[in-house]
Image (cartoon, rainbow, N blue to C red; front, side):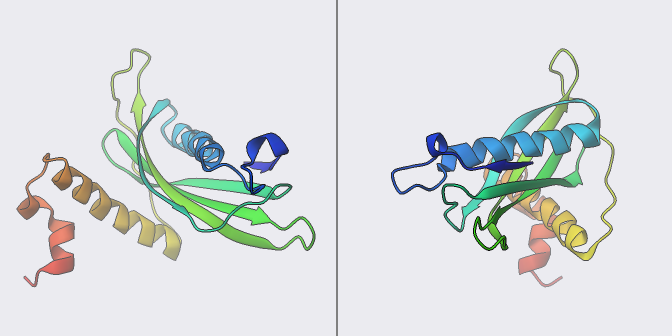
Length: 159
C-alpha cells in the first residue's frame, strides 16, 4: 500500500502520527492475511512495532506486508514500512512491525489456514523466528510450559 503523508495525519513536528501508521500497517497486514487464507481475518495481536524513523509530511509511504508463517488458524504477518524522500526519491526503511491475525468463518469461529512455504533467505529467517515468537507468547500467557517451548529452549539450552 502506497500513500502520501498529509497535514491532517501529522503531529506538531509535522511527522506522521504513530497511530496513523499503526492503522495503515493493520490494513496492509489484514490484506496479506486475507489473501493467504481466503477467509475473513481479525487482528489478534500486535506483537512488535519499531518506530525507527520519523516519517515527515509529504513523504510517500509504502507499507509492505507478507505472511511470515501460518499456524492452525493464525498467521504471523511481518510488515516493512518504507518512505520515499520527496526531494531525492531515495527509499529508506522507516519502520517494521509484526502482527498476528486469526482466520474466522462467517460466524466468527476460528478456521484452518493453509501452510506457507518460505522461499527466500529472508522468508526462511522470518518463518523460523515466527515459531519462537509464538512459543514465547504462549509461555508468557501461561498457555505453554517453558519446557515445552522447544524452539526457545534450543536458543538457551545445550541438549
